[in-house]
Amino acid sequence: MEPTDIELMLRAKDGDVAAFQELAHRYREPLRRFFASLLADRSQADDFAQETLLRLWSTRQRYEPTGRFSTYLFQIGRHYWLNQRNRFQAIHYCEAAADAVIEVQAPPATQPERILLQQYRDERIRRAIPALPEHYRIVFEMSHFEGLKHTDIGCRLGIPVGTVKSRMAEAVRRLRQTLSEEDEKG
Image (cartoon, rainbow, N blue to C red; front, side, top):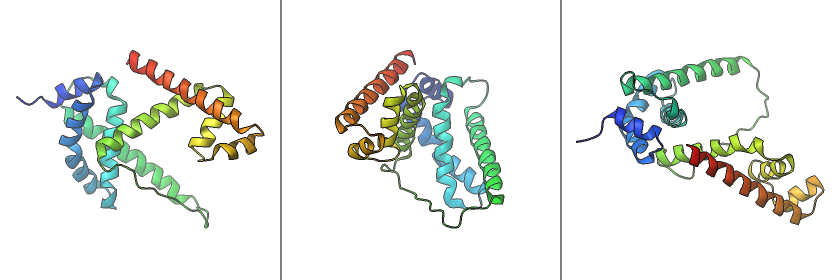
């Protein structure tokens, strides 16, 4: 017998990625249709569905089976849609710079579950970065968020490339340790 949505969500709450993938498979299309009916630009429906699933995964620890799972999930989606609508309306009234350039890159993976899990990993890393000592954090952020090479980082900070490399290695080691400790607690 196939597990219910609530059973899958309770397993996902405990970190079962396969259970979450099954829920994502079940609800991706219904979410897409839901957002297509709400959005003026129907091409955004997939992005909104994916963001809803990401939010479900990232808040899975708070899930309590007090009602139908689908109601819970669509409520997450509705709140996200309302927040985005309010944000868009606020931005719409602000004047944008005429020479602003927005660069959009396609995600490397095309399966929503893979993208979702990568976004979850990235978010965990972003939350862990502030705990790094400043000299490690700066090097890590310049490399990963600004895309600078070690030589460019060294020039900007006025430190040798070897120091940049050792700080980068230590930043990565500390981030891995932090994430590993989170996983053990999880």
